[in-house]
Amino acid sequence: MTPAAAATPAGPTLDLVTARGLRLTSLLLTGDPPQPGGAAAPRPTDVAGIVEWFGALQAQDLGSGLWSLGCRLPGTTKADIEAALERREAIRTWPMRGTVHLVPPRDAHWMLDLLGARPLAGAAARRAFLGLPDETAERAVDVLAGALAGGGRLTRAECLAALAGAGIAGTENWGYHLLWYASQRGVTCIAPNVGSEQTFVLLDDWVPNPHRPGRDEALATIARRYVRSHGPASRQDLAGWTGLSAADTKAAIAEAGDAITTARLDGKEVLITPELLDSGPVATPPGDHDVLALPGFDELMLGYKDRSLMLGEGHLKAVVPGGNGVFRPTIVRSGQVVATWTRTTTKSKVTVAVAPLVTIKSADRRRVETALGPYATFLGLDLVVRWP
Image (cartoon, rainbow, N blue to C red; front, side, top):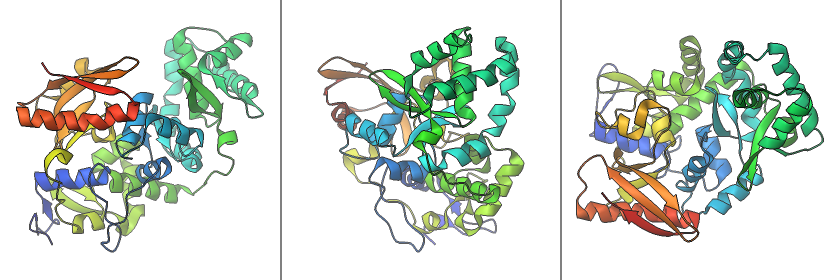
């Protein structure tokens, strides 16, 4: 047992600094995650490996999703990530919580089946609010399936035109709901953009050989993947991320067996993999490397119900202005959010405006600017940083 973990009847107790370091390792933001047996294995080196490690990676905002991958794959560019998605190393769909994620293609079907039940159960109420008849929604799924048959790929506008041509036309909210519903049903999924336009394909065309585990195996898989990629995290974090009920969350942890153990953090039980718990405190590289520039919808923020480990008291409003669910990009130092940032791009440069949440001295400002450098390289643009 490491010096940072003291034995208690309820299991080892993690201090906050150690927990942040372990969580950054799980999130593939620092170091190489330990494997069963204690040996460190090379971190995933491609999009498929990163997405499989997480199980699902937040990608509601496409640009944020691309940088979530890019910042975990040093040296890659936006074009590299887009090419990997075109090769179908991952696909975008609504696997859980009615929110778009990148998922391993062969896992999309079972994730939709397991985690999509609750969003689908609420679909009828949403349609009633929109004035959208249930039978119209079902017919829309058939229309989209027919329009995309035979390997078709249509932009969002073309999908809506196909619906309108079949006599299904309503408000913009109708269109979004119907495109979501077809994907939530496992009929369609989101393909890479063509230019700036979102496109859709048939899920079965892009995933001809889906994995179809039984329910118990599916529950175990999602629990294992969440804990290895987000731990230490609470049961409530797992339930919030997956959208599973409390009973299914409990069952998922039980099905995962010895792949998940527990520790104590701030007086509460947290879930963690045994190998990560046994690995001890993570030595954060000195200097610039403990500062990270992350996208707004990164798993570091979106992956947890309780964000207090990473986010100081009173800072949530700055990260999510107005509480509208739109998360700003963050600057993270030693596992804690210390600033937000926004960007403006031109043909040749990206200008980043940094908004500190804590005092950032001149030496640390240089480290922040260094951390933003890979993002500019990712975009293929020159970097300009603005401070208040």
